[in-house]
Length: 439
Ligand SMILES: Cc1cc2nc3c(=O)[nH]c(=O)nc-3n(C[C@H](O)[C@H](O)[C@H](O)COP(=O)(O)OP(=O)(O)OC[C@H]3O[C@@H](n4cnc5c(N)ncnc54)[C@H](O)[C@@H]3O)c2cc1C
Image 1 (tube, rainbow, N blue to C red):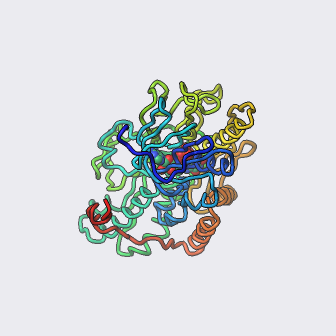
Image 2: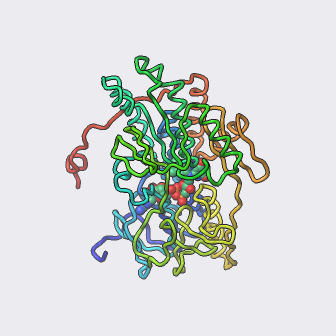
Image 3: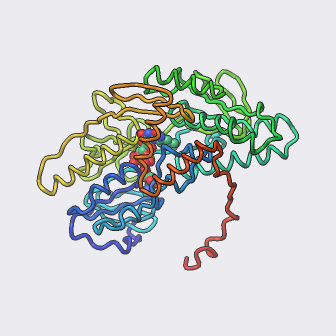
């Protein structure tokens, strides 16, 4: 750490410096709200863009392009003089020195806000981790799209019926909103898109499975919504297995806990989340799911100037003893309150505690079908789908992105023929020296 240089090109702060790690829902909201305030803000993310995770499944199933749901961080804050954006990975926190180390050097802070979200949890199963495909980033969603298209190109060249069936079938694990949305979109690809592209393949061989270890889909939503989601999926042709845990997977053979075997070269893992980890703090503050225990102001247990927000934060309350749900609204509301509290600090005003206002939840099951649970009303079907479309369109960052998503949705709806099925693969990566001669 002592040998590490300070990050260049960040002016020495004349005011207090807030370092925000993570440009997800929480980090973006907090940075927006701290623009033009009496703080210097440094926003750090390992990518140079914000990702709209709720629509990853549409990238994976060729409905949207990666750029439709990703927004450059630098563009978002280009007019804000007190905000500095850096693309680098944070490696460690040194709370005694009020410093962090990153792959671009070290940086001091007055306040540190950690909003690094979560990653896929395989619950310790190494074979599943090696062979299943996660969907926690836009690049993983794109990988799924390429894998499915590649499978179909391969299936045309294979004579063996069973090998072809394994290439054509997709298994989705996890019956939460991500699994339900993925399975519904895949079933629609089977129905409307793929048979037109691959007319010589027998699509009765393509199975879309959705496996859920619990006793219902969309756990956390109303019984009515989970029953309707099950019905909608079955009507679309998805084979839904409840009470079904995956025990092993070698890349083709899936072993279920009851001994049943399925075959697919594509198992999509949407079954678990664990918080991302940055070392350096006393690990006593790490709770269930790797989340960081925080107080009612999102202050990390045992530290006076370090905060955790969103999926990373574990704020145990009477209503949420295991922490709030890991959803976008919690991240946004916590960030918004922390920004107000940090602004109050400048004026020597008292801080407010976090209270979560649950605005409801929703999931789409396919074109024209969704389920919506609002605090005052629950409904399913076409109207729910319209509400789902509107809410997601409004939530996407950037006018251009909103327009692109709207146009893609309109095209896909009218033509039943999403146009994003190119299989573009990079050439083998050049040696570092060749690609970056100054290194
Ligand atoms: C497929 C999918 C679908 C979802 N659908 C919904 C939905 O429909 N509705 C809903 O409310 N929620 C949904 N969620 C959950 C929602 O996206 C999360 O709750 C939300 O993104 C949490 O926000 P966050 O700011 O805590 O973390 P994130 O949005 O995950 O942001 C974390 C950021 O930290 C960065 N980062 C991580 N580690 C480092 C590091 N070491 N150094 C620098 N940067 C780092 C990452 O690049 C990322 O930009 C979905 C999640 C997924 C994965």
